[in-house]
Image (tube, rainbow, N blue to C red; front, side):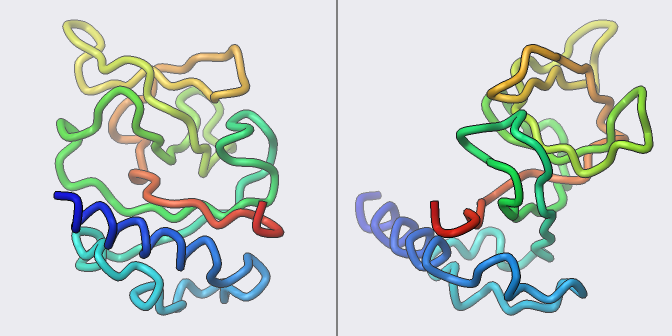
Length: 144
């Protein structure tokens, strides 16, 4: 377990020292595998990215940081504390929002997730149909 943690940590460190947002092509063809040694659970999936606008997730994710995310095959695997990327449930023109899950819906809210930005007071119930994926990493602007 310790060895796995060390390997994953090295992979994340290499990612943090890796490409800057302006170096990532917009056609999503960047080869992320070289930066994620030891994190192969995600390497068999397509890793997508989005540039974040705003500060609702500061200090975890700041304006112009790049989030890396993968599609989720089984929404039941999402849990409180995960950061997801989704389309706003009531304002569909707002897309690629990254917020933290603070509650998993049950009963009438089954198949929905209550989300909130770390630096925001607004909470939204997001139906699983609006969820694009699970955030697995952040590339910080200017290495911050």
